[in-house]
Image (cartoon, rainbow, N blue to C red; front, side, top):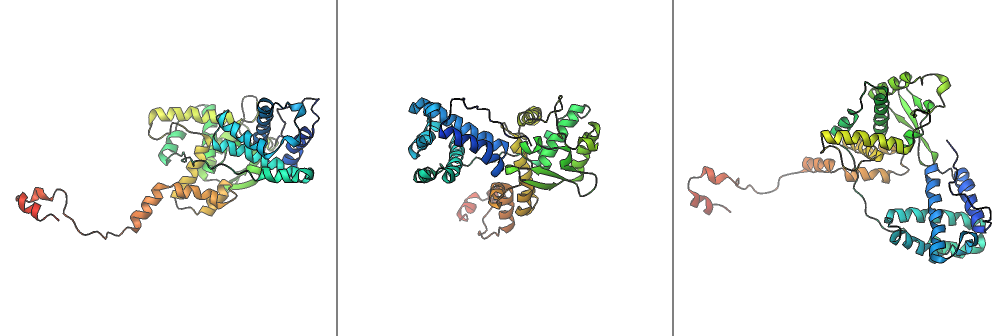
Length: 353
């Protein structure tokens, strides 16, 4: 796992208490004490780059004068409003930025206790309620069509099939697929499994089915990844033997999703992402009757309440449950076309209650 390297470099003249504490927060506290992932660190970094821009453009406080005394509840609230109004961000993005500020202020509570009262005021800012987006997922027919698109007569096609099928079958996040190394795979003997590193660098073991394992075995043999010297090598890599990026994997998915959509538009949503495959796997497990606790462990959710969104979203399961529990308590009524069998329309009309 590569250590986080901030893209935003503090100017050498920036020696304020804000710069000192923020740099320690991002480069020492979060990665080493909190064990935060690179993606979370990048998101937090972006938050404070935007906060610095906001303070300069809206409050006329340049970076070399920005200090902790400027991190107040009022300024934080104005920053949240600026994100929504000036940058056109969604409430969800606003909440992500607020979470970064809350985390920084929580860190400051133990290092800068003189401002404890103000830190509590900042922490009292609430997240904004946002609309729940409908889950985007594919049916089993849609997944089958998608996985049929790579040209398996080519080495590139076989690699792409291995990536997409593994991402679906394990329900992995795109970053978890990108971070895989050869030593993460256990397919020499049954039961087959793979170790994924999720949010907070927490690892989990996900079982693999035989069909998926065969695809992966062929890919690894073809690319010389069965050698013990390759254990630290990325499982999926580019032409320079560097691990694939999130964007690279997303591009692969989009390429084949576009091809599949041309063949059957009704099976492939217009907007599809790598997370859609994760949603698809979860929904298919729900529909197969797999216990929510097992699905939680496979997906790497901390709480089963997170996993429960799939059960609530499964309209097919709800409909089948209702049909199974349904008891007809309605009185018998004549068929809408019963009059066709009754030649005397007037008598039929009189008898129609």
